[in-house]
Image (cartoon, rainbow, N blue to C red):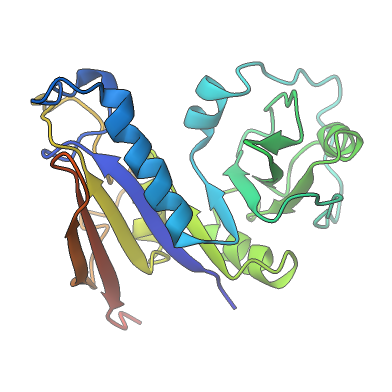
Length: 239
């Protein structure tokens, strides 16, 4: 069993993600006003959990690293369910097992961190003391399918909003785990080929979206030139 995964992302018209590089709205409004539309649309998705990449989390919330004294892992680690006081969960993938959490929540939602099975026992003990849930994504922390299965079966998550950045979006795309794309298009341009984009798979696969097709579900002009596009993923059986 897997949760329904909706990739919810806002980009410029050229598919770029660095908001400080986008051109300003034509009518004099601030970028922040328009970007608030993205958040309000996200709430409409009404998912059980949401997540974004480790870099985004650390830059915006928890910039410090946990310094280990003992890196010895447990021989048979098991998921840990902390006390949950929020209606939604926030998930993050931490393959290095080194985020230093100053809180057990992100924007009021309880954290579930996704770790490698080799995560040090000291770090797992730290998470338990911080009342932070965790689960595992294989030996290297990159088995996304196994992680999503545990999130569904152990934590009861039926739907998840994946909110970037491009690298984590690309990893989920390559794994064939995205069921729907919720693309909010900001009426502005970046223009640089070097800027991060909506999907940025890093790996050996030449065609990370191979066997996946998009069906347009809806196209809505929201306000001030912002367009909300929703697509359903169709996946061919490549086995």
